[in-house]
Amino acid sequence: MSRVVRYPDAKGVRTGSKKGFLRQLSTRFRSTPQTRDTIIYRNPTNHSGPAPAADLAPPTAESAFDALYLSTVPGLTQQAYVLTGCRRLAFESAEHAFHQVWERWPEVARDPDPAGWARARTHEYALSPWHRLRPGLNRRDPLPSDPVAQVLLRLPPWQRRAVLLCDGLDLSVAETAAETQATIDATAARLRNARVAFSRQMPDTTAGTSLDALRKRVKDVSVATLAQPWSVRAASERRARTLTRAVFGATATLITLVAVTSAMAPPPGAAVDESRAHRRTVQTARE
Image (cartoon, rainbow, N blue to C red; front, side, top):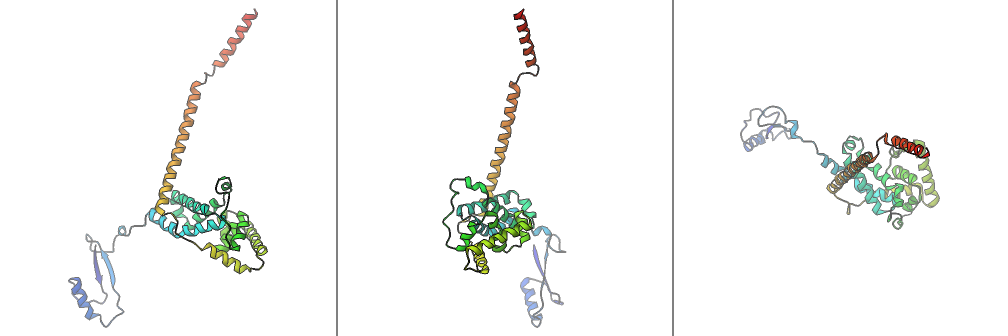
């Protein structure tokens, strides 16, 4: 692709080599420093018009996913840790959320807020009650020295999530209600009860100070031990293949069992014939 430089006022200047062209213009435009150049890209096969749109390739799904992952996963991991108090579960929650992001990438790419989509999945997985049945996750890490974090971990999960979204991430009550799939009244009640708990358990701290401490803790992120985006994509693809094989295997097993049972079952009229033969035998014996 060739580059042609045009100056609006370059009349009477001959076009030759690039160096010669610039040398001629240096004396002509020395008194007009505000003159701007207009750069036109031309296709060598077509010497008219701008560059074709094919030269500006759109970003691939992999690059878009990597950009979303690198920009949001540190904060999501920290949010999951604030919600659960367990570092292992925090990392697992963020990674699980981005497994779902990659599996449903067309849906996430069309979503007006992909980061919010991933955040909702992270919080839902982190606060799932099924983790209580898992060995090794029934105990939290030692409580942090921060009193705000201690009070937050004592709240019910739904109040914990509401105060994190509203006071920690500065979301509105309506946005929090939409993300948590609750009504606005219920979300406002959860937020109000959580703030009352903060004021009761921290009487010497003002509301503004506790909110600032919560925001600071939510934003205290680290990227030292996070997985790389390509490894998350590869793990998601392996997980999808494993689930697909499991579904196909279960379906094939069920079809085989149905076929074997149908083959071993007696014909529909066999039971009736046996019953009639038995009655005839009994009558003959009586006679």
